[in-house]
Image: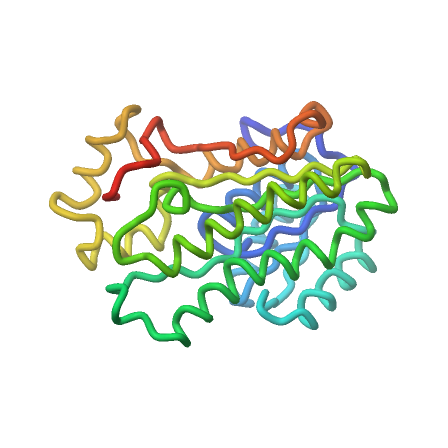
Amino acid sequence: MTAAASDSLAGKVAIVTGGGSGIGRGCALRLAADGAKVGVFDLDPGNAKAVADEIVAVGGAAHPVTVDVTSREQIDAGVAEIKALYGPATILVTSAGREGFRRFLDITADQWNALVSVNLTGTFHSCQAVVPDMIEAHWGRIVTISSSSAQGGQPFMTHYSASKGGVITFTKSLALELGEFGITVNTIPPGFIITPMTERNAEKGRLGPGGLDAVIARTPVRRGGQSEDIAAACAFLCRDEASYVTGQIIGVNGGRTTTSTVF
């Protein structure tokens, strides 16, 4: 299906939340290319269908599901839908997320709760919905998508950074609890990946002086990351070869330090 395609995940069923765009789309495409049948979960039904159609068009198996990850009922229904179609999901990538950029004193309680509800509680809902089938299979792979801003902080993103920091500690704790069942749980905190979200921030001047070009110049590998970079790391973590890797923070950031205070 692609230059990186393999059959390393043949027979596996995967769910990717936020799979309709950006990093989630990249992960869905890569897991499908490696042989998994993919449930593409997304709040936007058009985006979910477009990615599923893209996978099917090149010979893969994928099914779109419209899901709001803040709703446990929708998550449970989506997981059941994929199970009825393909069998139980034993791979989960939690890429659904919401950004926030606001001066700390201007953040309202509703804005705080909205980000935590999607980024952290949505991860909780998604994991809890699929773990029983993973335990039964005595095999599972969970990859959460956190953020490098959760490691070093980010001005004007206190609510976002805090919610993604919660994802990191959630991941490490869950890994300790589920290891005995053959389930690994790891997190990838992307660092400056060029997605539609990044481009919107650049247009709004949120990347600082010089915009995208300046950020790339400060990145050791001298390029912005792509969703495929995250997807490649995600695919490795989902393979049998990664069975001894769990509870880890796998930074994919082009060598950027996580203590930087600017994009």
